[in-house]
Image (cartoon, rainbow, N blue to C red; front, top):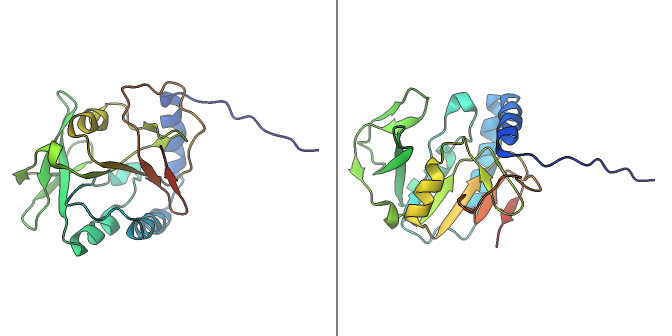
Length: 196
């Protein structure tokens, strides 16, 4: 006889709590191993024909994916790497080209950000690697709840949006809305999800 355990669907607030707790259980070694596995999966994918790539720099206190490995790929392929600076007054992002001269400094929330640099028009960005706490099988994502990336992606309209996650998808996010910008792909250490 088979028994099925039904896991109730959660809303964004519940998912944030769940995945922050799950992240807290990860050691630094696990984070680095899983981050490297994600980068190696990305390396084999057909996504490197573009010129301008946006990537987030991790908040280490939140145990985010270590994107240093992806940065090395981008540098090795001589791509333009774009990073953001947060404006918490209106919850928007400004974008800058990452160069050897870029000075990075953690803001008061622990986000590494450029202090200076060459400003980039977001509509010129081809591909975005986006942070997330959770996602579902339809490509909806859950971030920290301020809407920074939803606003940025709606304005920039990149050719491809790729989520990066340590954990598999939820079946559904109860309060996902049309205002939320959906992922094209989400890459995990051991699997890639593609959304149509």
